[in-house]
Length: 169
Image (cartoon, rainbow, N blue to C red; front, side, top):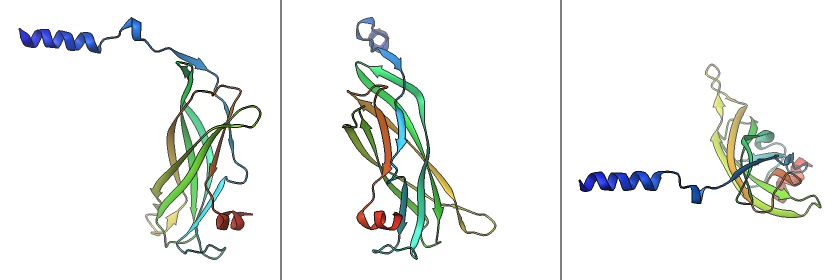
């Protein structure tokens, strides 16, 4: 009998409570841009990077809002998937590491929020030649921000140090 009462209490606690429902209001998704100076990433095995020792080049290729965009309790909420395409330039490095940022800016180009991420993976290998081939990595992140709406924009870019910026320009 005790088990039945505990089970019924458990069911009641797990059921929907009309007083505590969270409102998910679908909204327009903000525009997404790739940072013009930070849309390409290069890496090397060496401490100093130059055109001769680049291991791979990565580009931000595409994005998608997986399930749409919502206002949840007056805060913007969405899942954003980002596609990276990585081209190997040597067979010395099989592992991929891409640091990137996602910034939310308002209509006056003021940064409301910036989040830093990284994505890791391995190159695909051609079964016949055993060589590294162009590979894709997708990273899905959750964007939650109090001040975001469809008038704001999202900017995606790679985190680049001065050496990498110099090589890319």
